[in-house]
Length: 233
Image 1 (cartoon, one colour):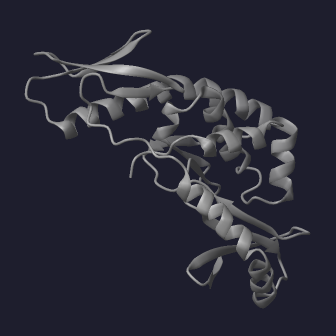
Image 2 (cartoon, one colour; image 1 turned 135 degrees about the vertical axis):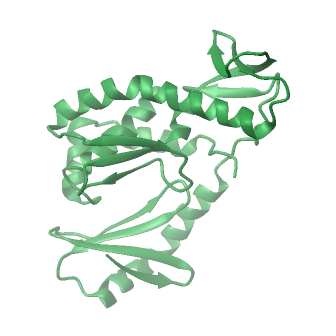
């Protein structure tokens, strides 16, 4: 993979057996990629990117302006979001194993007396991962069958610049744990997006065709995901 700079904007170039150039600005922080035909010269690609510079900056500005969540301290009566729904947090200090309980109105965080803010956040993050692990195997399995692919494994982690990623060579995907806060259909969109990369590693015509065929509402899902608040920095 090659890269070049336009001012302070780095553009990553991937050459593939495609007919047209595909320039993409990726949420949530505006990473820029360019997929180009195999024999494309770098000076030609640079000239093309210059013609789209205004559009690139506009897309990046929109991502930067996207709302961010208020930093959470994990205290009682603080609001927290799960699967797109807002809950009030109730923190209970008890002499028992730390954990989280969910009912229709609130999330209850149970920690030992004296537990600090960082540890409370760790308990909540572990619970978020457990919520994702509870739904992902069935979701991934359904889309493996539909797309005709086989995933070797998935990983969950906090990610600053992506909702997900795919290691095509190893057959792995990584998913941002922040997805637990978004409506479930947006998690499905990201899963489909990353599984499709097992077939088409870059955002080329083949990749777009796969999404159009199997998840035709993907553009609406992408727009909705990108309109929702990002994690607090």
